[in-house]
Image 1 (cartoon, helix red, strand yellow):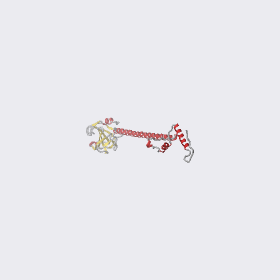
Image 2 (cartoon, rainbow, N blue to C red):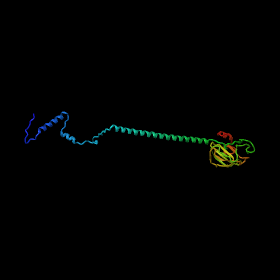
Image 3 (cartoon, helix red, strand yellow):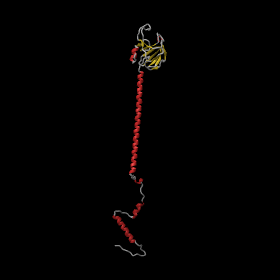
Image 4 (cartoon, one colour):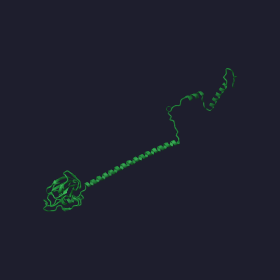
Length: 253
């Protein structure tokens, strides 16, 4: 039951109304399940908001669809660029490998061709023929027979080394006149006699077809030609059939 007091000199007007209003507010807050006071509400409002470092929580920012699409497009473009760069690098590596393989193949082919050339034999005089055969008899030869073969040639015709070898004699050879003797790569020897001039020196290595001198009529001869011998040693008397020797090495005589 509420009591009222008459308004007087020593009373503040409206006190009863203020008290009743406060009570009604408290009752309403209690009914909705929210318990708070003006004092406690003021205290909460006065506390500062904690920072990320204090809470350990990372704020989540929501971006719009257009921004997300731009990020996706940029990532896709970067991935595409990286893939294209990788393909370009792979193509460059493959091209470099192909170039190296082609160079290696050409080098192998060149070495094979050089080996073939060095192992090839040629006639001592190009386009000539045998004018006196091996073991022909007669008084012209001190042994009673021809120890080599003669190739028809006028003076000054180029004389070639028949194969790869090293010069062991180059100079005057008595009845042979100016001569060259070559130790061949297979261990045999070839001799070239009656030369008008010599163009190689002892110790010099010669290749097939190399000019070693010019044909002539020096020594014991009746006319210009090339005397050619095949031997087992550099010495006179070790001769072998020069026609069979040349044919064995692929020279058509």
